[in-house]
Structures are given as C-alpha cells and as structure tokens.
Amino acid sequence: MKKHSLRKFLALVLPSAMLLGAVGCTKEEVIDYDFTVSYDQIETANISSGVSVHDPSILKVGDTYYIYGSHMTAATSTDLLNWTKLADGYSTSNSVYGQIYSVRDEAFAYAGSNTSLIPTDDGGVHVWAPDVIYNETTGLYYMYYCTTSTWIASNLCYGVSESPEGPFEWKGALIYSGFDMDTLSATNVLDYVSEDYVQANYIKSGSYNYESCPNAIDPSVFYDEDGRMWMVYGSWSGGIFLLELDPATGECIHPEADEENNVDPYFGKRLVGGTHKSIEGPYILYTGGYYFLFVSYGSLNREGGYQIRVYRSETVDGTYVDMNGFNHSAGNNEYYGLKLSGNYYLPSQEYAYMATGHNSALEDDDGKLYIVHHTRFDNGTEYHSPRVHQFLLNQEGWPCMLPYQTQGETVSETGYDTDEIVGRYYVINQGTDISAEIAEPVILYLEKSGKVTGESVSGTWTQEKGTYYMTITIDDQTYSGVFCAMTDEAGAAVMTFSAVGSNQSVWGVKYVESAED
Figure 1 (cartoon, rainbow, N blue to C red):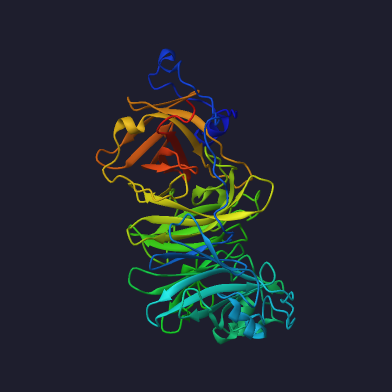
Figure 2: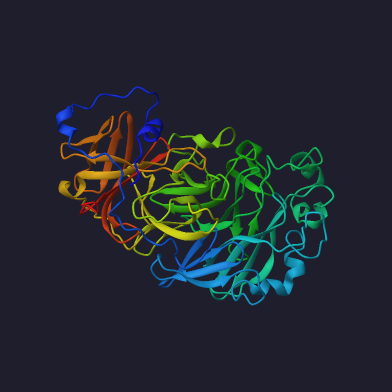
C-alpha cells in the first residue's frame, strides 16, 4: 500500500503556507472520508505498446495511423493503442528510410556521415525527428528530418515518396547550423546572406552563435488556415524558428530580414525560446481558432524532467503566449508555457510515466484531438514507448490532456449527471517544475454540494450545465477544464477530469465502481 501526503500538492497550488478555511465544512461532515492513497485492488497494465518509436510524429492515411521516429523507426496502428513495427534502425534494408544510403556521401556530407569531410562530421550516421506530410500540390509524401553530429552541427533535409511507407528519395538539404567561418563553405548559407552578415549575426567569438541561432533539428511541417505550408524547427540554442515552404518544391521560402520582429533572412522567424534554455520538438496544430505550438522542456533521459508544454497564437507567426500571456525568450523557462504532461503516476499504471515528451498532434476525421508522444518509465531503464492521449479544449480554448492513453473514449457533449461525477478522486498536479520528481496522487472528494474536500484542503467544483466543461478551485487556485468518462490503463471504467490554470495541469480519476471494495 502506498501513502502520500498533500504537501507536494499544496506547494503547487498555494502561494504561501497559509491554508484557507474548510469552505463551510465541519469535522463531522468529512470524518468518514478516507484520504489514504491505496492501489491494492487496482489492476495494472503492461507498459509495452508493441514498438519503441522515439520522437513520434503522426500522419493518418485512410484508416491507418503512421508514426515516424528518430533513428529511422516507424510504426502503424488502426486504433492509436496497439502499434506494429514498420521500420527500425540504421540499415540499408530499412524499407522506409533505406534509400538514403544510396546517396550517403551527399546526404551526410555536412553532419552525420562516414566521410569526415569537414570538422563538424563525427563519422557516424544520425537521423533524427522526421515528420511526414502529404503535399497537396505535388501529390507526394514529403519527409522532413535532420542529420546531426554535435549538439549544434546539424542539417535539415527532405525526401519524397509516392507512399507513406517509403522509400523516401533524398532530395536535398535545407538549413544548416553549427558552422563557423571555416566550415561555412560546406553550407548553403551564402546563397541567402552575405559573408559580412554571417560574421555579424551568426558568429560569436569565432564560433557559431548558438545562443541566438537555432540548432537545425526537429522539423515539423503543416498547413495554415489559408492553405500555406510552413516548417517549424529548432532545439535549445537560439530557440524555435518558423519558415514558410514552397508547396511546388517543398523547399524554404527565405524572408526579408526584420530584426524588430525577430525575422532572420536565413533561419526565419524566432517564435519562442533562446539563450540555450531547454526547448525542442516543436509541433504546430491549428484548431479551435488558434495555432497551438507544442514544445518539450528538459532533457530527454528518464530523470531529465522531459515534458510537454504549449503556447498559442491567433496567427501562424505569433506572438505565441502561455496561459499567463507571456512568450518565453530569456530567463527561467520553468515559468513559461502551459505544462500538459511531465513525470506522473496514476492508478493502473505498472510504473510511473517519466520523460513524457517530444509530441506531435492530430485532429482526426471525427474532430477528436490527440497528443502523440513517447514516454519512459520509472523502472530503472531508458526503455521508451509511444503513447496517444486525447485532449479537449476548455471554455477558454486551452488544451486539457486526458489522464489516460486513448482507448476510443468519446466525451459526452451534454455533460454528465452529478451522480456520475461526485465521489473519491485520485488527483495529481503537474506543477511547472523541470525535474525528476514524479507527481503522485492525493485523494480529494467532489461532493454533491459543490465542495471539494481533502486532508487540510478545501475548495469548490462546478460543471457548466449541458456541457462537459468544469472548473475546480483548490484553495485559492482555479482550474478550468473538462470531465470525460474513459477507461484506465487496465480497462476499468473511470470518470476523469483534466483542468488547467496558471500554466499547471490538474488531473483527477474516479473509479465508477470502487476498485478497492
């Protein structure tokens, strides 16, 4: 049996150590409540999804979902839950990516080759973070990915195929990073800017100015609401950048310089980040009247605090802001961006989820919205597995990621009866920290009267009549979110809520029939 105090939870929701009163509750009203966190009678599910795909980027073709990942991996699914391997590993027999080896000396000439042509080359083969899109103009599938050698020496490339299963024919390089004046000639940078411009803007103390310029990795490509094609990319270093693409060629349209609006003529527009703070894996999805920019903070290893954050904007090129109205460009990034998922444990999980990051997103044919990411586990290894969670937008239009991986749940558009909602919840607060700490549940009761009761905790909850929208106030912090009936990892029926406030996410899980009786 596991027991946990409320101290961690309170530290996240209270600005001071002073607790408010019990919102009218007397001791007699709560004395029979059981605040002990126990999982004794709750079944757990195996952590495997059938494949290991790192940095999964999703594409749907017909009734088949594809995910493409780093290290030349790919998988397919028809239900977003069970996955079948399509490609796995650096091999000439890799049917999706293998064609790249026939042009190896060209494709890896700058970063990640075996030819050692220039100082940025480490002699290896590194293919990271691909993203595939169907180009509506050419009628072909375009894969954008990066080759890389060092923490800043990278190269964005692309290939095309008639099939989402490849093979993708290498077409060329797009953007380079990590160069200095000696290696500049191995790039295409001088096709777009002068050598003087490079010296003034891309070089600092004789080396690549990584605090202001991007690392050319983690590309993802999307169409905006007007049908224009864009690529967002970047990792740590100078932050996340945006470039428009020419749909006729799939290549970059380089803008005019606009220093006031953070637009560089080679790299494009900086959207968020910089000064080498952790931020990577950008993905933009347009839905609900907003462009949502998903990114990951932290380091990708199990205890690196890897996590999903989101900003939004009404226009494709920003400004992207968080729930507090801020865009992060400098300082401690812990306080910027709505944190959707980090390290956490919920009932029915075999192990705590850790390093839940580098996500893509999908609006499905039926309008359901999904976040697709990989996760590691609190099992002492770096094993990882893809996960897909449905998310819903709250009344203010912010994403609320549902607590469990999707198993076909559909939210009730007209909401839920009070009797379905009230009861004993396992509740976690994701906080805003970037650390190895795991968010673990405390017990809170949602009472029929609208009160929220816990051990030394009080608050209120409401459901918007005729909808699935809800709010929950815990002491002095209010979260706006959604209710949704779903199943836990082991298939048991649960009522859940997911709510966000002040860049924090709070999740609750109630067993429909107590698993502990």
